[in-house]
Length: 288
Image (cartoon, rainbow, N blue to C red; front, side, top):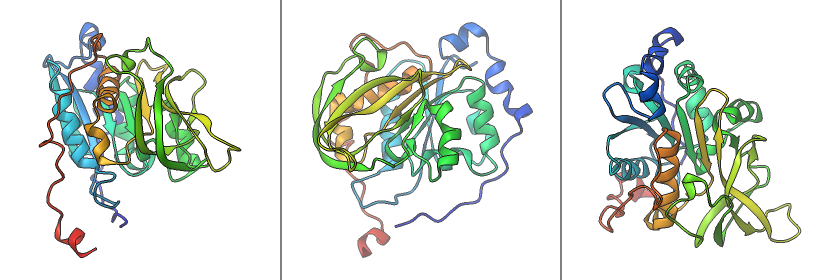
């Protein structure tokens, strides 16, 4: 089911957005703290556009917000698409997005000016699964320097089970978890910035591969503007968020983009079986 497009109020101008980060003391910025002493993270989702149990955008944002706030002095704010009130983004240290192609959701529309201003000021960015993509190559190439890479879809995807293997064991995002088996819709061959750090891979066959091949699934990137970025192309099935190493890599990555230190054993990210239950289907879903 395709999403209907929503109209957005005009975002704040660059001059209005500039104080959001620049006004913070440098020590607070370095620690990922807002003027209120908290690290504010904005999580962007939207209404479902896939079958129930897949691409559960807003539900994942809410569950990840619960995980993120288990780290002291973190404030996680969830929004259905980019917030219509520009003040909601005031003081944020990082943006997380799990949506249909993230480049379109973040950069297209009147709010795109505010988003790009924040990113150029060093606000972190992390994106998962389809949100690492764009509907056009032109927009994808514009997105790429902010996220450190993007998924173009050219190599396709493979829904199968494979081992997720770390490639950068010393990186903070890889703390607190080890290699594990995962069934997912693996997005293949993301286009990375030259200085991006591949974090983990799977060994699967793409539509252009003669046989099973290593494919990078996630990366970290430190932008010239001082911001950090984390792209993770996993995330099709809702049940995967219930897998601790899968969830650990997500929470570590979001916090890392916000400038927070990641503990040796990984950031806290506890969820219960009750948390992972799907909400009752809406009437429209019952009709399908």
